[in-house]
Image (cartoon, rainbow, N blue to C red):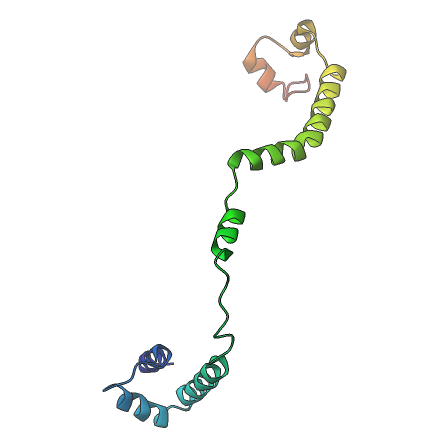
Length: 131
């Protein structure tokens, strides 16, 4: 689609008429794609003409929609806290169980270090033997 096709389609969609209408008619005679677009656009406009044209919402419609859209942030936070409470309790129990099962005393931590010399510990490759 060339730039002129885009321009013609924009003009067709905006339904402007006047001195540009001659340019549109000439282009539609030369371009089959734009002619198909124009005919489909006319068909859609014709189908939508009068479709529910007399339907208007009642006076309280806008107020009902606005009331449903407004939520107090505290309500949302409270709802989320209640929904997450069981998962929080399960996670807390699991972490407490792990903490009590793997409790290490400070003397255990000191005895696990291979040496007080960092360079020797790096050279021993972590398994107590020198490479």
